[in-house]
Length: 259
Image 1 (tube, rainbow, N blue to C red):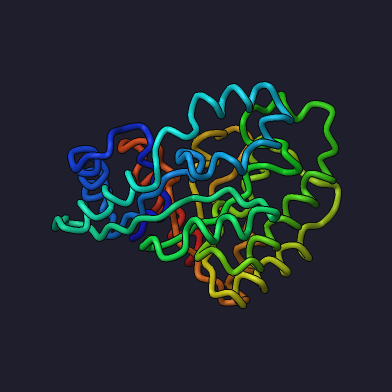
Image 2: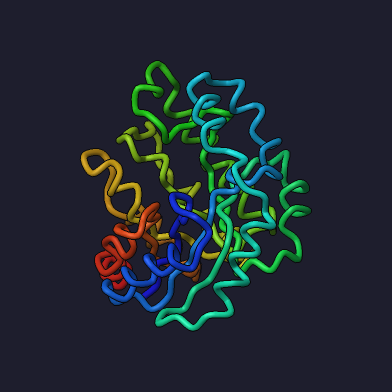
């Protein structure tokens, strides 16, 4: 089993910290873990976020508490350390990158030839709106428009050719909002682009862990069916941000995929 989306941001860049994730993976019978950082953790990526910070005082304060705390070189040094040690599980390293269409070239330039095992592209902002921070931030907004733009951006992400996978492809559902129209055409377009670009989809338990009352576990069943029909690889993940959450409901996600 794979846990393909694990954040290491809450601890130091040390082998002891990595070992805590490995120990939990062994306990949860996980064979491979994919460790990553949000790209905003690195000062090199900070310029991508000017407009989202300008959109919201809340996001501006959150961003400046959490962003730019490392340089990419720090992370690459940790990766080399880990690769020189034998662990009881396979470890891959990557980045989770917020996708902004206007920063495609910028993203490519920063990540090219850095030696990452994978790049995961994710939508976290829709027209600068941070949709996954607080439910009350949705008040008064046009849900149909947000969904439309979310999936348009997701399709652009898949077309960009930058990423190996797309993170939590329907995380927009986390607070229970639903559009008034069918998403089938968007699912089909997204699956087609992922297939053409040999990208995987992140079957992620983190949304349900964060919002158990409003979000179902993993991706929408119709989306899973359409991805499978288009031969898109699906990789299970916990979206853990601490060692305790490694492997969270990975077995259940595997069972859902094979139904």
